[in-house]
Length: 157
Image (cartoon, rainbow, N blue to C red; front, top):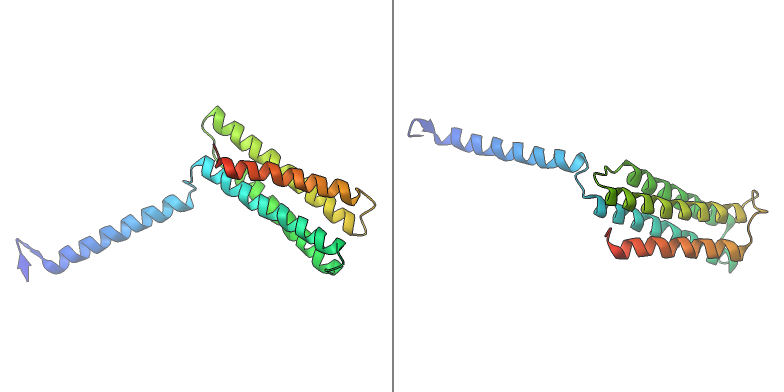
């Protein structure tokens, strides 16, 4: 069937092709990291906070005798990996203003403090141990969690 020189089928095909192109462009925008920096820093901080809280729980369960050493060290290794991933995401984010640079620097510092605290926790429960005592490890984890939580609550502002 023809209408005005073009077939109905051709018009439908053109609309479908246009929709496909629009979807492809939207996917490309998502994959190239169009997340606003404040949101990216909030996400990285939330990921880091979850990792630090996991480490705190692992140590608490270990101290109470409700965990096995393998489970504790695995939990702490996973927390280290999550913090490193969060820091990588934050470091890779593009900044365009001095305020964004300051936010990224603050986020990276908080994530680094969390990673240092988790590393100390891991050292305290493994053969590498001999390092920090439980009280100082717990205090470092608490301080790191507080800093990350403040960044999450601020929402990147």
